[in-house]
Image 1 (cartoon, rainbow, N blue to C red):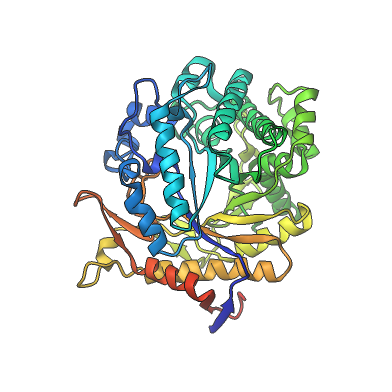
Image 2 (cartoon, rainbow, N blue to C red):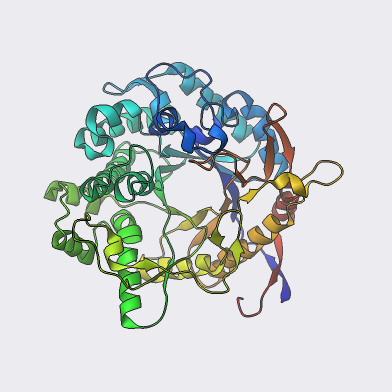
Length: 475
């Protein structure tokens, strides 16, 4: 183990992220403005830890000035959140803006900029209007793609003069994977055809938003935020390598390639045809995707994924699932976050950075989410009531080191952003595991308190130098 003192690159982002639905709460929400997450919570509340969900969240919508002051105190250079599509409009067909909700974002953006924090805005972070899911099947419908573009046009018209960093989606693969591929979330339907149709329509929507942004001549950039699962085969044997390659096709390249290269991988399309996965795509849609690739990507990187070749036969009556080609593999002796059940391996950032450089044209990118969720953090409070989260400081330092190391190796890495700024509600997990630099005390009117990591992050930003302990085998 060695200690390194490493200067941060000039202009390197040191930010944090959250979403509208995970922070704002329902205060002021009008009838008919439920999102998919709201509908899931309403219909299936028992699966959310202690029944806590988006209804109150952190009440950011009423306390954003207090929270922006804490962002400044914690040293954030950037903050990324979403605009809640389901709340921004009162009429989804005609894109009628809810002026009350839109005014809240006017105030939030102004408050952030007054405090020297650059806003990054995402157009969809799982906030598909529930009405569109019920009426059209959500992203199953090409009409919903068009409604999304109408929504985006209204958002850009209102805020593009203030905000210059835009992102179409956050983790566009997640909802349909949990619902239609794995049937783990409401409304629990295993349907690979719908899964791929949602994928395609989100890729198409990304390209159409990019096209709109450029046609209108707005200043700034438009990208998307993906969650590539950095995947390692169990061994160098051909069958394990093949399993990892196919896993990568279905969970990573299905969005990386259209967004950055403007095309679907040929191997993916061939496998979908082989297994008779039905999805509607036209040559005109593929041309739009090809002509409107993103300016940058944010990459959410938490833990590695390890797979091996399958050792059991696939049940012939089971609908096709990519797991036909792989099984998950747990590395013996792996370092773990036992609260979350995730392996800790900071090198995923460097390895993904190398891939961005070698396979994706060294497009500008940044770590859009990285963080450590810990259960029952109150046990780490000192006598003054401050959480001494040294484990989080070590986690951030090790992962940030890999981002800086990647930048030094020539990858176009623009920065590192945390999940999350404050503790916040997550799907099903609710507040069980805490990720924030700032504690949210649910038992005391959601009082905010800076954790030790928040003070450390501020010093990091002020000093522009990272001090980190690194295992010499991992440097």
